[in-house]
Length: 341
Image (cartoon, rainbow, N blue to C red; front, side):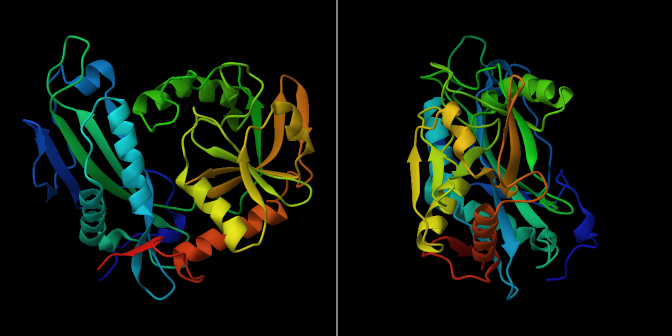
């Protein structure tokens, strides 16, 4: 298929309207058949549940052009499962896993001209989401919902290389101990906006959130999980019931064990022990791993030996291996790569 006339190597990480999106509506206790639509607009009643009580959940995944010219997506089954967990937590209907994967395939196939060519550093980002649509004035779940998938081509998250970030230990709590921190709900991100704007105004790239109960343990940032590397090359990630189960982080842990032969564990990590790690990264769909060079805890600087100039050696190998799997230059574990037929 002929690609759109886009300067792929110079697009940013933002929204570019594409030709098709997937839409399915839930009414009278069931989802309709769903369809592709050319209309990018959503028309809602002024009292729609999503507008009144923020009843919305979402996902994020990508489609790629591999080295041999195929169009693929990465582990959409896990996105389907996580969206289902998020919906159930907010008393929303679950969109079936098989239909989710099929909808992803339909959207990517219909917008294949927007899937960036191999080697440009760009990808097609997909955003599946569900929201309450019928009027709700009393505090209760909506009874009607819409499931949509939009997509947009995006450029590389880092232009000119992955420069290590400087982050601060936040004074704000990201989630309550028994709240919604473990699901991908829009409300989690809404409450993080003030904290991230505050961090940016103070000269930091991101926040490190501590556990809200004791404020002694590392949780995550506003939109990514942490990954640390010990001085003897063990990969360690925080364990908590109030952080999002990142698909990228879970994939990187498996890559560390099965491809790089490294020890990897998920456990509670205290802020006090962070100074003893050799490398630190933030895991997410957008950049795979964003390196962290320095963490500032109310004036006390924790500088990682990997430095402020480039990504550390272990996180570099992890990123290169996972992106190689996604782009088809490295053989993937069974089921990780889904071809768009």
